[in-house]
Image (cartoon, rainbow, N blue to C red; front, side, top):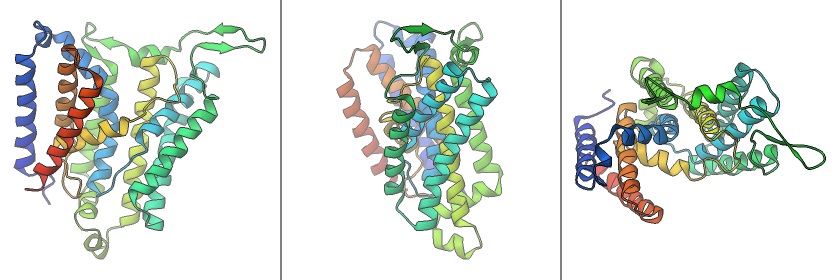
Length: 323
């Protein structure tokens, strides 16, 4: 079973080349040609790229996950609470946060697989639940290094070392650690999808669920694992988000699901399921990231960027109809 035809790859590469050509023309007095611009672009897009890893696996099954932004938000809050306010060891803070993300994803997958609820509805419910949980745990406040005392005053604590590690740059400050985490996440997904039986089962379920069931593939377990891993990557993204912002914001991740879906679809993974690749998603991340950066350095307003992204998503879906 071929997971990627030559057409989506060529189309994604052509789209990336077109975006780069636009950047070369509208270069903001040469800013587009500077490495700092692309380094910052990769850092800014890394959290979205991590979310897109999980979204790719879900979409390959023919599903969708609207809850990724909210799970990121509650993960950022929990990670900040444990590491900043409670002073828990890094391994505990990270482990609990990852388990929370995994549990949220598994819950969505179980509802979809066991009760045959549409992924749109099940993940919409999780989106609302996770956002509410983030606000409940944080008291509606950002979890930062400022701890409010009983008398109303604030006591400031040191930023945990794990925040500095994740938020820093290495190799002469040319590569952000979050970018390395994104690339490692994509490599992990690539191995899962192309080198394991479970990866082949994902494509089979997305291509024809009934045929996969008759072939003896555990469809329900495959879906639960896909959504579970998606939740896990949301937790990874939440940890990175908290480290970069030095706080856990209960509103973090709002609308991030739209960017993650856009990256997957623009890269060439089809929403119908059964076809796609994490490497196509990487191309989608680069396309969206570079386009956003080009618009940013040319001082294009956010409203115009959102409108343009919507048009591009629609165009990408229409182009897929010919595959």
